[in-house]
Image (cartoon, rainbow, N blue to C red; front, top):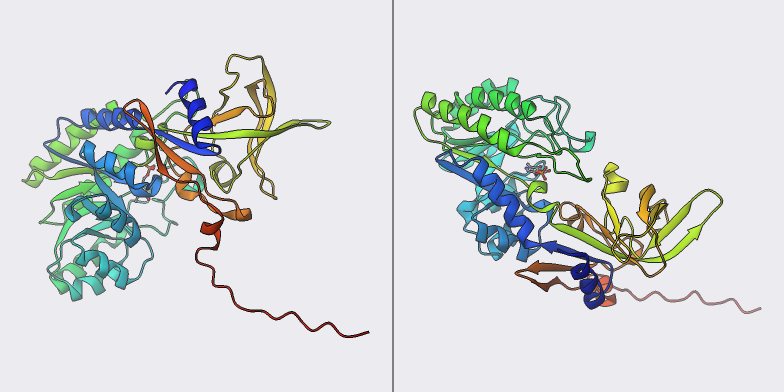
Length: 409
Ligand SMILES: Cc1ncc(COP(=O)(O)O)c(C=O)c1O
């Protein structure tokens, strides 16, 4: 998308506003599928948590993706978007048996990540095939909050507990049809994937009725010009070779699965905000925008980097700015960042705003969540309205409170 398109969208739909480019999503999807084109059966299940707008899910469906979900609500969104239940995998963590049963009854593939629920589910539903999520005990990921495959992580069944899994399978006569891992997000080094994959292959050998092996996700995308990213093409080549040879050993063509979130949508997103105030202090120049960590929490939560472009003045002389939000707490998007000269009223575009941005937005400070716009086939489509005052009150139940009688003097 050109800056002029973004400016028009800000003028038409107001700010702040999230904008997604469907062409970028499609390019990323095709990069992934072409990297793994030499695997007979491959399935990319888009991680709904990254960006769950139904129109985005419909784009994923049109590309041939399935869905990776973590809650019954995500499953329902997927079904609403038109996905067949068999194209959805449900990988919850720490949810109740009741929720898993509910999802299973919808015909969705269940992925279980602890022994207790595995045993309870297997005892009640021995005929429902189940995938198991293992924890390979690999430290990977760009930040400790998004490293989830290490030994202290709450995710997955330890690889050292496979004998326990086998005992449960034998006792319940349940059927394990898939093995899965997801070690973290923003993983740069493909050797980490390949190393963890060997652990998954070793696990897979223990189960005779597998249909798929799911390698999770965690591909790193570029956040800055010339930033490094996971080399998908090289990973595709190396993992394909290894996967195909594993299938031969196993004696069956299995499906190779991935569940990318960030890789598919991160770079497709722009978050547009308007500069309310340029504030020069004795040490810093702040650009205060009409948004905050209520709408884009990643910098405050993970110290994530989002490039910020002044799209009203992209070629202007660069100066140093700290870009901050309007939330009444420290609310910093960027510190002492070089940005072309900013005037009050200018529109700033935050890059990489597709994944884990709107989906983590809240109403903190009683602000409305922003609108979402999809740039599709050369024009802008509103795919979520900006909230309004009625939305803030929507689920509140007001009770009568009598004012205390004021004592007479
Ligand atoms: C189980 C699982 N699969 C896939 C993903 C998507 O990861 P990414 O957005 O890094 O591709 C996540 C992200 O947290 C996850 O927890």
